[in-house]
Amino acid sequence: MKNPLFLALDVDDLERANELVKQTRAFVGGFKIGPRAIMRFGPDWVKALAQQAPLFIDQKYFDIPSTMISSVRASFDLGARYCTVHAQSGAQALRELAELEAELQSRRSFKILAVTVLTSMTPHDLPKYSQAVSLPDQVLALADLVLSCGLSGLVCSANEVEQLRARHPESFLLTPGIRMSQESTQDQKRVASPRIALKAGSSALVVGRPIVDASDPAEAAKVYYEEIQKFLDQAT
Image (cartoon, rainbow, N blue to C red):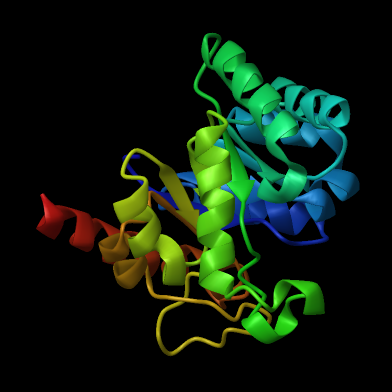
């Protein structure tokens, strides 16, 4: 990606969402929206947003295969270039989603990203039955399943990126929980700076509150943009 920075538009006010898009569009590579914005602002707003910048619909679909297929199609029809499903949805669903991704990609750029373990979770947050396997090992196992089923997009924290990049060099790795070192992490627990995540092998990054809640969102987005571009320039 030319600019791998996605801004998460996690807000409740339509006017504020539109203002954030206007203020930051020059510095981000796309916008990420989830159920909070989609349910408040509606499909017409989503379609309009997709006309302004690459759109990432983050609904984390996790259901029976037919429902997931229909949901991904709906996301594509709204203009999404990326959408999320849960890697834990199982091999059958993931294989069918890989077939769907290939079909949709023949029409325009589109990628399904499988969520491994949420960046808000630490090993202690996992269900008791999952704690017998380390969190990094769970991420790797889920990633192996996703890639074996034909998808190549994964959502993972920066903690797992380096190992995943070495294990699956062809994968697209999107990393949430991006923060500058001095910023509060709030509900994100497995976090990293843009430079650390990109150096480890992240393909794209998601930033939310540090830009959205800034007194000057445009300036905050610019800081992230310049940090990312500086790294990319040095890496080439």
